Image 1 (cartoon, rainbow, N blue to C red):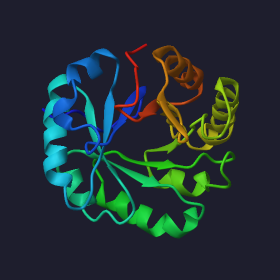
Image 2 (cartoon, helix red, strand yellow):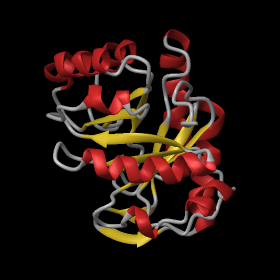
Image 3 (cartoon, rainbow, N blue to C red):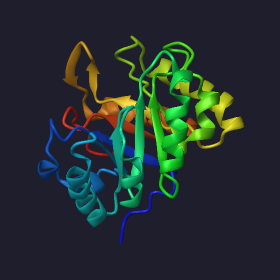
Image 4 (cartoon, one colour):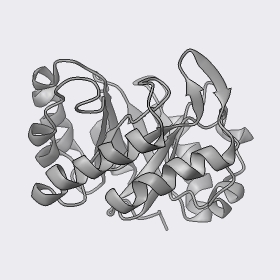
Length: 223
């Protein structure tokens, strides 16, 4: 039976780039033991079917939900939904309104499965128009990568508190934090497990979970 994609409660996810870390090399039992509930697997128009089929089989076997992590221009959202796999659209932009039609079309194509968006962090990186995109998805994942914005756990906590006050009042359950598993884009040294755990614990009271970016650059072993 396929893992349920219908809820975003208490997510602890991992972004996986199978080009960097092949699905065959990932220990899914270890992921489950570490508390991982969801995986977000990077796919393209050309490779989505075989990659997602492989990932879904392994994830279903241990009770982890599978999502296709895609970029604008992905044309097979409906086919992914028919596989009972969620779709996670990565929209890193400074012009969010220009993507609203594509987001809406993908939402329509993914009825029956989870549709989520990863975006730049509103406030840290300009106006990302969360109030416009929140009604069009199941949850928003702001990229709260403290190393790239020269902030620490205190800054992270303050930001998710603000999101909770603003967005969860209007759109309950819409924020899932994206967290970095390495120091920064300029320093890909993996963070240690205690640092990652501290960031997860900082966001948990104010969000519906966290997704770690990215598998293969982390020593995370679970909370």
